[in-house]
Image 1 (tube, rainbow, N blue to C red):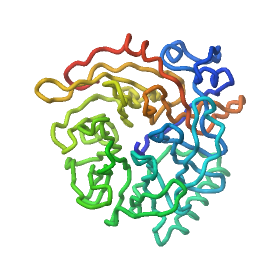
Image 2: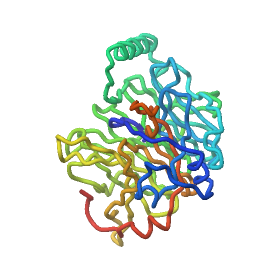
Image 3: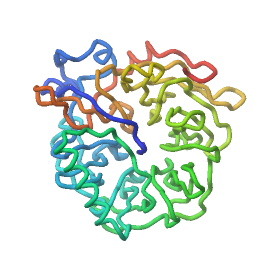
Image 4: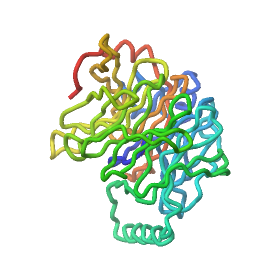
Length: 385
């Protein structure tokens, strides 16, 4: 989205093992040799969740934790499609994905309704030129393959992207937005009565909220620049999102009240911070971050957690962040399970052993809450550099 979407470049390495699968189940396991001491302190050995797709990512848990939704590019297709897959912490890979989206155009930003019966997502399948758009994308991919080119990730603000809900089998498709322009990066409020989303209908991407049936649309952000990837806090009182309003493409984490007031920067400086996500039971925010202060160095995206609090005057404050991944590849788009015990994120850990990196896929680990609590700095005032 997107986490919602509009991702920055994604790449990573490292494979899961049978021992790692035992670790997610809580059984003793020997960490893989390449697993760092930092990751071993905070996370069980990561286990691969998705396979059989060209690439997959941006996954979220159903409220009952028995399913996940995500976007993936099937073999032979040029764009992401939306899938639902059964999930069990005892066997994260023992499920076959089922496509929910229509199978035409670009799709992204899936999210379960709070009762678990419907899926919210963005799709451009109503684009009258969808077939030509797909043909152009295929031709570009084939040309890149012949030339050995690997393009940087780029998210397209497709003007035909609109929001839809459907049953988990893809039936009963209901359109929620019909304004001209990009509508995506969507999620439900905890009580299911509202939908957060991003739209460029006013000229640049801003955050909006509407009733769950698509009515009563209200704009929440108005600053020039990109505002996106919004999620409600577990109590519905706050919204975390990312923005480049200070410097183009230099994304930072912000938090505002659910009505758009009380906006505060959580991060600042020459880093890129994005994909914020709330812990369901603890006052923690997790996000993806990388240092961009040195233009000659390759930035590495890792996952960071910070404690937060609401001050007596009602303002929001966050503490210094704790880094919980340090793999040489990128770790992005983190999402906690509804009970807070698991962390799922997008990475390309693995490879063929011959120097070729694996494609991005979903991975899952069990959190060591005690270690995180012991090491997490208490909250402080002001943005984090």
